[in-house]
Amino acid sequence: MTTDTVAEIQDLRVEVDGRALVDGVSLRLVAGTVTALIGASGSGKTTTGRALLHAYPPGARVTGTVRVADGVVGHVPQHPAAVLNPARPVSALLADIARVQVRHRPWRARRPAARRRVLEALARAQVPDGATLLRRYPHQLSGGQQQRIVLAQALLTGARIIVADEPTTGQDEMTKRQIIRQLAALAEQGLAILLLSHDLDVVRALADEVHVLRAGRIVESGPAARLWRSPRHSWTRDLLAHHDPAPVGDRPSAGTPATLHVRDLTARHRTTTVLHPTDLVLHAGTCLAVMGRSGSGKTTLARCLAGLHRNHDGEVLLDGTVLPKSLRHRSRAQLAAVQYVFQDAQAAFDPHRPVVDQVARTAVRLRGRTGPAARAEAEHALSTLGLTLDLGRRTPDGLSGGELQRAALARALLARPRVLICDEITAGLDAVTRRGLLTLLAGLPQTHPDLSLVLITHDRDTAAIAHRIAVLDAGRLDVRQRTAAATRRGRAPSG
Image (cartoon, rainbow, N blue to C red; front, side):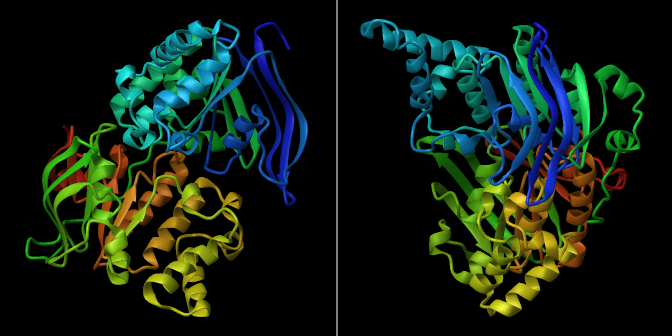
């Protein structure tokens, strides 16, 4: 490796059960630069990034070489909550790492030295009000805050390389800009950044070098400026093509019965109010998008509807009947009626069981279907959403992120819900996969006329398929009717 090259991958092939996840991938990371991997869901970006950590899927056969210069490789995963211990406050998570770094000091000096290192790492990761966040537990942080805490952990280890896997997934525009500034600042400090992303605006703003992956192979590489200006491969041109999602049509008349009615809902995390008094009405056959900055209360609102957040006052009524605050106290019919599709589809599945069996389980548990009948329904539901029988028979690690999101959607729909809550399920998907999923979501109010669809999203293209948009700002809700002109254009209204 040259003096400025801090990591190099040559002719990497990772194969699982005879299927190549990446095949012949070569790239190098240079200190002080941002190298981006882009491509469709399942193209091999994460597998390539994790190769720098020598972390491969179980049973993988690996050939090629991965060389990393002196120093630690930091990893910021797509779903940072997965690597934060939920039982320990942020201060303890960071202090454990910092204490290792200062263990050579006299024991009386170790605690203040570790504290200084923690605060320095928080500052480098651009964590606002870091001293306050230290007292919180991971579940009390927004997705953007969790992402920055994980980055601070990586910086505490002294990492010279950061693998940032979809760091802006599910983040609002302001948080995205902060993350862009954050990663750019780290590159200016001499770190090498490997950016794995579907967010082409972020890649355009950050990357010095871009590699385009398709089906595990790099089909095009080059300086970012050249690639944006004149992409050479047809797949790159398709990936960069602009897309407007199909609108869902007009909102049903005001006389349509309300499926879900939220009255004076106020939610808290411990003693902090995160959702101020909120009223909301959902009608059958309609789609509501809930937008807002990271930490504004979007997911808390959704979790209250689903019975996943009990610390709230007010009422959530389904067809005029008050739903219990906790899903543990909801009947089987009530559980089936309100379904939640999570952002992290991988974490929502048992890694050891075939996907089709897990989808079928919903029909058995919530609708009382027999095993064979439930499996037949599951196979049909997966097929309807574009997943083959072969994909359904695989365990979750055999599916891409976009495929797993479709499987999670099929599982939720198999409950025959009245309300379907989709929490950032288009986040982190490439443009092609997102386009297909948005088209599918846009058609749900027509194919399931009794269904009310709630989209938790930061993405304006996703919100554009909704009949109404609810904007949350610091826990306060403003619901807006979409104009007919905005619907025809497939855009959210301004503001």
